[in-house]
Image (cartoon, rainbow, N blue to C red; front, side, top):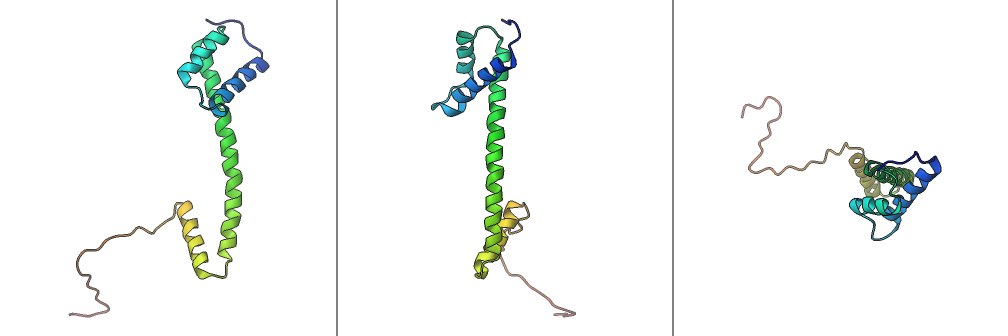
Length: 126
């Protein structure tokens, strides 16, 4: 059941309510319970609109979480740089390994070799 268009502040208030019910309150509300809650408490919009509030709350959460991670990456990068300048070569080596790992360039695949390996150097005819 669709009613008249809500003002921006009312939509934002509903999204905020959804956000709080999903991410702040513990235990959080499930989607189907959210739809039922909206029907009972608002009753003036369609399920599609209540779903849109749910999605907008999710977008807000993802955006804030992404910003938190980006802030943490800066701190982690600074710490890696400190490790690269450490006097202990083991610490420097471990920092290099971590940089390769997190940049997706880790080439430390280990293989198990069964049997003998024969190596020939130069023009050896043996």
